[in-house]
Length: 423
Image 1 (cartoon, rainbow, N blue to C red):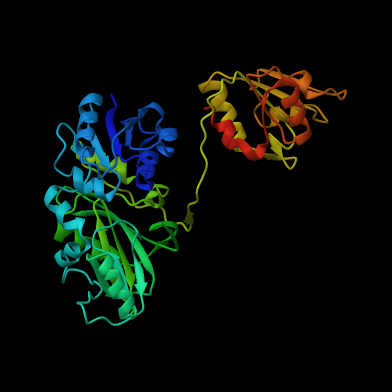
Image 2 (cartoon, rainbow, N blue to C red; image 1 turned 90 degrees about the vertical axis):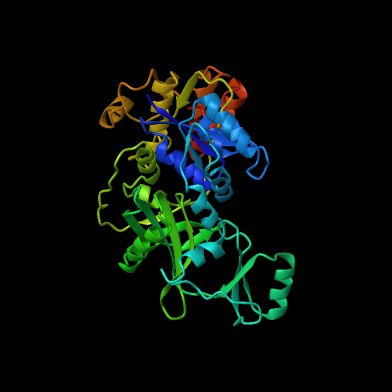
């Protein structure tokens, strides 16, 4: 029987990585808690539940209520503020995060750096009046790159201090920045540590990464884990200074938003952490040594709420592209529609040749519920039975005719995000 997992808040990039890590597992039944309607509703469907915003006084009690109501086994905080607020405050479920004492240390960048003073190199923190400009300013309590700024003179710095008295003012580091994804056992021993570059970032989250091979970084991981007694999944970030040496930026006892970099290499931190919290010993294989670039972008997911019974799909330039390339994404969607959602799939084509032979070559000769092969110039709209139909065809003229004559939803091969919304 699957154990139930609650991800809160479920709409962050961290939450999306948690969901992607666990969605195909036979061990975990993933639920989410969120204060607004967002992408988590599409990923989790009716398993996404309301909880107040993370700084609302009712946030923790609402999470506790969901734990009791849904018989939740594990709670996964997916935002730093949730991590600190939930530490040690949930009964009946295990929180995947730091214990309260460690959460207090990691809550502030200043206390984290102080705790690791002399353990790993850190950037110089300037006292008022000692700054060497330009300097790097960031909130003592914050997440990602929110509120960070390079300040070039004292007047600007004083204005920032007037608006936020909890700034950290550090030396400006200008070299390469890396994230080191780590996992430690219950005794704080590092079982896995792997660094990746932060080639491009958006909102403090790395969206383009490459593997970084530097023996010094796993060495730092061991020192940090020993000093903080970290367990489970965690990460730290470092950046090189003018002297060419790495210096610490931050540490967090959670998965990073782009730890999917390691997941595609075969290292699933969230799955391993839940197994470890269940009392099992975990270990990691060393991923194969191969070169790749990990790049992220905004992507689209839809939910089609209209009732669709039949999908009509064209062959040339829709199912098959450029005469010989299989539209593998469309074929995968059609398989899901037919076998998971019990939709009727009809091939409606003007193919010049014996289409059954072409289908046999790609293993689809028995896939379609019906094959309609037009050879005498008939209009495709004569064969589409709408309006509970979806018509997928590269021809704009054909789509307009079907839409006007049948009332069916018409989609080009460039709009498969909508087709996928029926699954």
